[in-house]
Length: 325
Length: 295
Image (tube, rainbow over all chains, first blue to last red; front, side):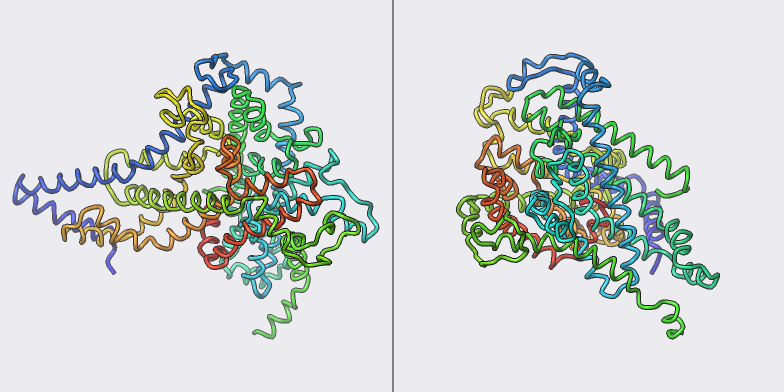
């Protein structure tokens, strides 16, 4: 087969020579074709661009404007521009939004990411040595198809005093634990569920990364007498970096903005704000208390935090590892 | 060779053990759900805990159908999911084709814009999108400025679909795939006098079928499971409840020991359609998750 780019180039050159030899009459259809192509292009993009204008660009500016205003809802003419007042109020060091809410947000994300990424590295690596790999991966992937309402309620059931987990604890002589009612345990308990639900996708992506590693590397390591542990640290992990960075960053983003699970499992971010995270507080402020300005400012702050953390992670991974992506 | 290798790699029983314990942790919650939904009256939420039902009964399923108005919830969920999936497929394929194969001014800027849209997290648009629904001009009694009416667009089922009709990720996925469609093929058809629409439908779309299935399955599953937006719309208009919203609503009733088994039945019923689709199209779904990195 001929090289496609070469072929088009040749074709275009041929067209050009024809155009030159015959003169201006032949350049006209070509120009017309380009115009037709351009018209088709804009037409094909029109529905998407219209959508983005109404549901993305407009709302983004509206969100920025709202975050700089005070508004109690209903009458749009009553929106009052108040500058950075909302930001100042929620970002005071003694504000509820900074502590416990932002602290909770980070804790939740860290626990979920550590469990999901750590667990998926181990599982993806171990599955490579087993038979029926597809079956094992399928098991870990199952929760990905369930709605957050299902996942949240099922785990609420598992966590309850007369639930499966406490029954197992009692069976080995441990007293029952109020996972969702103990303020010091509720946040980790929900974060575990977040990790449980997202580990399957991480396993799949890491598996693709592992399969992409050149097998001769392992043979070389074996000849050099490296054990499995050494091989993992010196070959698998470094070569898995791109997938690992990808999984890590996407899980961080998901963990920082997750709040559906918290709505389902704790309803009000309780006990005593122990599971209240930034996106959930934003949701409550807007849709429960009608403090639209405050809520929008919270959304902006969380968005900026996620954006900066993502950029930082990309920057660090570039500085330490070269050309990931 | 193989004998030597077997010596070096004995049966990896520790690996099996770790993976299997993890696998049990992944699957047991699902079994607990199914068995709880089949438990008889007074069996749920009591000590000592029992994994299996004592008396097996379908009562919770009939109760779910009655108390949840499942037919209405199913209707809403099915309509919304199908429309959103169809819309995402069509708009993504069209925009993806334009960005991959048509030459026009501003194409690269638009492509970069589409990439940028993927960075906007959904929670950021939740508040303004909801306010736009309430103040949509000329619906639900609103005047041309979106004022004066009650509920605006939330009076209509399209309010459940609107924010999901186009997907930046979908456009990106389609565009990346369509870049690989050979140009000679398109040129040949153009020389034969085919218009851009003919080209799109007869040449590009058939080639894009695998990636379209992938995008379709991801969109379908995601939309079927969507909760936050649907719950907001349902809070303005209870007629527009979808399955997840209805189930969560039932969950909040007062006596959890009685309602939880019904909730579990509802969860089983609402998860089955997705599970079946997943089992048949697992290959495509898995490819999609790998491409997107997130659910």
